[in-house]
Length: 186
Image (tube, rainbow, N blue to C red; front, side):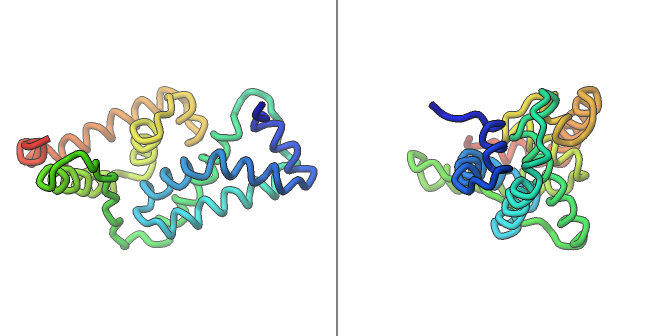
C-alpha cells in the first residue's frame, strides 16, 4: 500500500532518503512538465525541479499537514516561484517553443501540422504575463482545479478565474489571425 505524501514528508524530516526518492518518483514528471512549459527549456526545468526537491528535503521538518495545502501543491508552488525567479533574471531571452509529443499514428503531414500548431501555441503562451501563463499551464496542461491553482499561485479562486479568463482571451487574440490556417488539417 502506497504511503501518503504527508507520511513520506515526515519520513524525509527524519532523514529517510528512500522516502525522498519515493516523493521524487511520484512528483518529478509533473514538476518537470510544468517548469518546462513555464520556462521553455528542459535544462532549466530540471534545475527548477531539483530546487523544489532540495527545498522539500530542507523544509520537511516544518511541514504540517493541516489540510490547507497538499505536498503536491507545495512542490508546484516552489517550482512556480523558482520559474518566475529565472524568468525575471532573463527577461529578454525568448522562450523556446515546446512541441507536444508527436502521435506515431498520424501521417507525416499531420505530424508536421500538429508540431506547427504546438509551436505557435507555445509562442503565444510565452508572451502572456507570468501569472496568466502559470494559470493556463496549471489548468490546461497539468489539469489542476481553480482551488489548487490558487494555492499554488497564492491567490484566491476569483483571481484564478480572472487570470484564466484574461489568459485565454489573450491567446485567442494572439492566434485569431492564424486560426483557420492552424486548424486546417487537425
